[in-house]
Image 1 (spheres, rainbow, N blue to C red):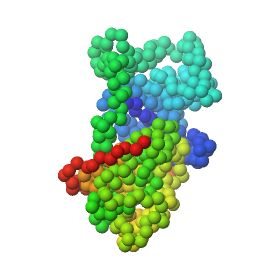
Image 2: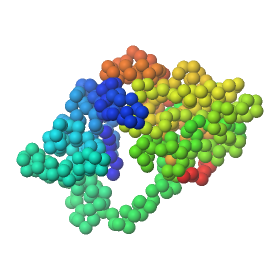
Image 3: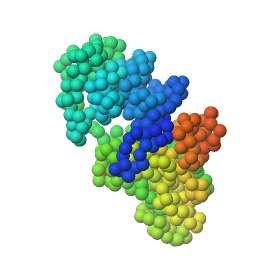
Image 4: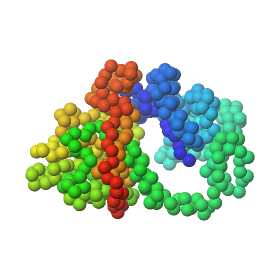
Length: 451
């Protein structure tokens, strides 16, 4: 039932081409979100379409189109990208769903827009349905029916869209009481009938210990170690440890945006899980949680190692656009304070993208582990920090040395720093990642989840 998004080149928009306006959130406008990916077909296929192939091969049932454009043309209205390539060339048998109110962006009138998008290959329209003062769902259905009656949308296209939607529902066991598909090859998916009791049991199992252990394992495998000096890692469970930073005890920061609420949340009240501080304190009896730089105390009186969990507050869509994605001044200040004396400074970054780290700040970091957005299972990060599990992750993109590298690449459409076509040297190149073997044979301890 996974939905693969956002087809396609959503991450390749030119810097400054964004059309989304989230000024009300305090975010800058016209940066990247809902922008234009200006690139030729060869690069589109090599860099962007290629990223979808494993998910499609694994049997993804739905694909969501991107708000963005390719060379000035909205992807939602692109017959080439949605039908010729995705459904034809790649043989996708599932359904294409629009993004939220994205159809309205494709023409001056809704009647023209819906015809363009349905004909291009959109099978299901996601809409606010008039809930926020926009076009009501009754009007949208009426416009669609009118377009079919007028011949703007052929009935064969409607039949195909309905067939694809029913195919997905059948595969998910949502069409009880109807005959099963005659063959998986005929449907393109393998349908399974589920009873109401089975569906209820499935919903009830969400968040069960087995699910949490699987998520914890995924966290371990996703970590990327960028720096490890002075033998900072793995941490010693028997040594004193000072733990701090805005993400140390914050499930909201671990989860990021689109978690329970549209823009995410901060703190531990919205869901249950294990924060990095909880997991660390279960391993290290001498760990202390601090609130700010003033709580470090003199090095000779406290821990020889400081673990700082830093990064970005949750963001979504254009609210996360920035002219320069930098490590915050507050985070840099914590690193400065932690590095006073001879303390070892271990930094865990919670982020959905590379954060530019000033050279003077980087010099004060002994170990730098990128945890991305690990979700509710912070224990997976701590497993690696204390050597209960190995670290083997590699960067799937280069890590910029400064903000200008990122902006130049997006603004001009040139290759990112560190790629074969670029002469710029990134801070860490594509594929970089230090490896660290596990040193503990026993299983890591568990902690009681918060929330």
